[in-house]
Each structure stands twice: as structure tokens, then as C-alpha cells.
Amino acid sequence: MVYVTQLIGKVVLDAEGERFGKIAEVIVTPAEPLPLVAAYQVKTEDGALFIPWDAVRIAPDAREFTLARPISRITPYQIKEHDFSLVRDVLDKQIVDVQDFRVVRVNDIRLEALPSGQLVLFGVDPGVRGLLRRLGMEGALGGLGRLLHLAPPQDQYIAWNDVESLPTHNAGEPIRLKVSHEKLSKLHPADIGEILNQMDPAHRREVLETLDVETAAEALAEADEDVQVTALQHLDEERAADILEEMGADEAADVLGDMDRRHRDDLLGRMDAEDREEVRELLEYHDETAGGLMTNEYVAIRRDLTAQQTIDLLREMEPEAETIYYVYVVDEQEHLVGVISLRDLIVARPDTPIEGFMKTQVKSLRLDASVEDVARRFERYKLLALPVVDDDNVLQGIITIDDTLEQLLPPDWRRRPRRHAEELRQTS
Image (cartoon, rainbow, N blue to C red; front, side, top):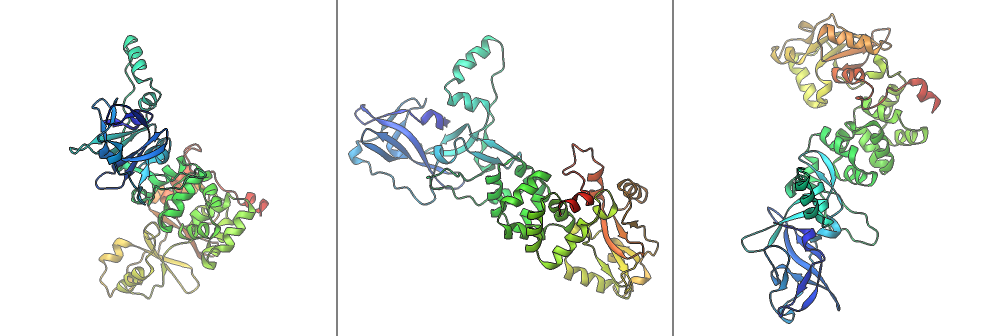
């Protein structure tokens, strides 16, 4: 086991035992299962040379470094396109620990030797021990700890396979580290959202630009309210509008409701006309009412369809999972006349008319129902979603149980403050 901070700045002797230079950088090339150390940058009085890994002998205690052969017989290493530098590109940089869903700063880098003697990039150390080692204080503080009977800092090493690197933005330095965010995109959206909360705006923008639009929308919906707003404001306007279109209309309305008028109107103007109107409609309602909690994305059908026709229609529509707990039945004027559960739909004979098994006593809410009334209705009837109607019983939207629970959380636990229609009108 060797740490990068044990290499950097160490003297390299030539084959005759004379001082040759100092190690300034470690060059790594991508490989499976782990990246390989390909070369060392050694600074000499005549300049810097990239020495191949097999031309440098490292003592077991990593205190002595010697060229394996005369410099005249060493062919300098040629940097390849996908190579990256551990000091420049990894040390002191932010990385995403995709195992524990957090952003950390790299204090040291752990290398391990293969049977051939070549080193591999094994992991990173974001902990206190890595920082002490880097400052040359690990031994001294360890002795003091033993004297005072204090436990030494624990290793906090993170395996490289559990790391997602973030790009650097140092002026004048080309970014050699190619970042695909493959590992990050495979996480649950809630975990990506938590990671976005910990990132600075530049890295957050990079991630949201790299993820596909659907994943970016799902992840951003799970982030904190202030993160959602600033993230969209830092993105290209077209990209931000695409993400808002992919979000649920209620989620997009929540984000836009927290923006100033200029940004809100600009992004609304770039959205698809149908999505824009759905969001505008939701922005009109007070957030502490059923209208403010609902989404206008739901499944509604006519009563003259059969069970099989309804199933075929659902396949064609491909609705979001959280909006398909129930299928609502409306007449020609969109009045709510019935409801069917997915279970009832699936077990019904294919040729059975919807009217034959729909429930006509539908539990619904008015647009101005309070959050407390909504919660009581959910608790009383043990439903996963409730329809919202206007004074004429015309279906306006649905409220899902998860949106209701979030509004009932203590303020410190809630992702965003409640939106007030009056506040929106004052900023419009």
C-alpha cells in the first residue's frame, strides 16, 4: 500500500545513486478493473520528464526511489488521450461517493501494487488521517494520541469503484478526466438529489447537463427547494425548460413558484404549450389548499369503454406510476362520475363495460379544501390518491398521498416552504 502524498516531492536517484530529480506527478491510465499507474513526472534541473512506471524502483517503505536503468536507456512516456494526473485532477478535488451518497474532498489517494510491481489506483482518503499524512503529522499526532490514551483517527478510505469524479475548472488547465457520470445516473433519484444538495453550483450544473433529461428531472425534484431554483437558473434556458417539462406539473409549479418573475416567465415561455398551461393553472392556487397540492396529470376515461379497451389505452398513454393508482370516469362535460382501481381493471373480464364495475360513490375534494381536510380524508378512507373537483363536480386534478405527507411534515423537514398564490401575484 502506497499513498500519493508519500510519493510527491520525494527525491529520485539515478542508476548510479546520484540525485536525479523529484517526483511531481503521478500519471494514471484507465483500465479494468482499476486504473493503472503508467508513469511519474520527475522534475530535474533540466526540466520535467515523464518516466514509465517500470523504470522507477520504489522501496517497500516508499522512502527511496531509484531509476531502474540509466536515463539514456529510458524512453520517456507519451501521455495518452484518456490519461489523467492524480495530483492535478484528483487530489484536493470533490468526488461523489456513490456508495454513501455524499460529496467529499480527496485528502490522499491510495495505491496498491500488483504482482508485477505496477501500482493501481485503489481508492481515495477523504478523512482526517489522510490530511494528517499529507501534512507529515500522522506519526507525531499518533504518538501524542498514545500518550494521552486517545484513539487514532480511523481510515475513511473509499474504493475507486465507488467514486464518481467531478470535473475541475482550473483556468489554463485542460481537463483530461473524462466524466460520464455513469455511476451517478444509476443511483435512485432521491440519492442523486441528496448529492446535488452538497455540490457547488458549477458541479451541479455539470451533472444536470450530463444526465439524461428524465433522470435530471427526477433527481432535481428530490433536491432542496433552494437547490432546485439555483440549479435551473444556472442551466442553459432551453435545458432548464426541458427538465421542467419532464417534471410533474405540480413539481414544476413548485419550482417556478419560488423564482422571480423574470426567470419564471422566461422558462414558462420556452416550455411546450400544453405543459406551460398545466403549470400556469397550478400556479393560481394557494399551496395550503387541495388546488395547490394537486397535479393535473391523471387518467380519465369515458364509461362506454370496456376493460380491455381501457388497458389498451393505458398502454398507449404510458402514464407516470404515481398518477395511475386509480382510473377516473368522466362524462362528456368532464364531470366525475366514477372510479376504478387497477386491481378491479385487471381482474375484470376483457369485454366487461367500465360502467359495469366502476364505483359511483367517489370520494373527492373541492379545490379550496385545506391541507388538514385533505389529510383527514386520506386517513379516513385509506386511499393512495384523491380526485379534486370544482363546484360543478368537474374533475380538475388528483392529490397523491406522498404530496400530502410532505405538507404535513414539520417545516424543518419539508423540502420547500408552502407556496402562496398572493405572493405569486405580487411578483408577477
